[in-house]
Picture (cartoon, rainbow, N blue to C red):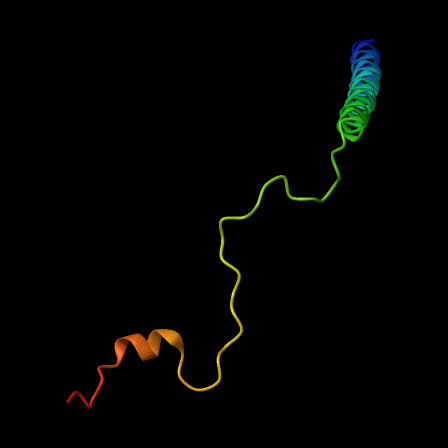
Length: 86
């Protein structure tokens, strides 16, 4: 008798756990759907305002690398002292 009660309790617990996991997964799926809908709505609003995906919104403050000059570089010319001063 005691064994059957423990078995019933275990089965009841496992069923509740399974039910809980099912509800949890359903809530996660719903949350992901809501997130996707919100992102799509936001993207649509941006597109309506003329935003181009991937375009930079303002110029970069980083300098572009210049092509190396033939011979001495400009920095090397400035730092080297002139040898013939008359």
